[in-house]
Length: 220
Image (tube, rainbow, N blue to C red; front, side, top):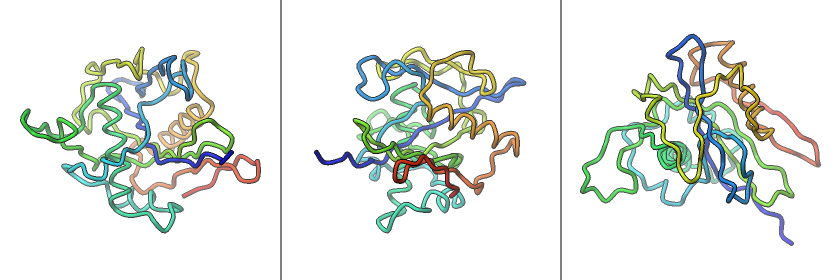
């Protein structure tokens, strides 16, 4: 049997810092999912082929693009990097009903009812599913402050893909069951915010992957 190759995916850590604590949006994956059912994760999913074609309101920050491109292979292009940002915001809309970007006219034929604004997305981390899993993803994790994007945290709405949406204190998950990689990414967020609450766009980002059976954390 041919080993599954990882496909591009994107996930977003939407952050609410309106109170003393910082909260992140998570939801429970449906029991119908083949990959990681019934656990709490950040909104996200695979990059669609059409994500490259979506017109954006503003591009990714140059420093975020530079980090994203590292160790992404010779086929990495500006359109592929932009598509990863689009995928993160598209999934946020599809799974939690949150739009990031100016609305489009109702008569527009675009795939999304808004033009994604990628300019405030911070590249936080990257993780590649180990070989042997039923599905493999090369996931880029982005962080976004809700207030910077003009998002009302109360507007998050559960979907058939992501149920029981919760705003979780990043330093107090409260016993919520999460996959190991989600826990690791949450820990990366904790460390990053403790180092600099603004989450600078050009900061180094960890890459979690396996090589010859060893689980590794490299820096990009």
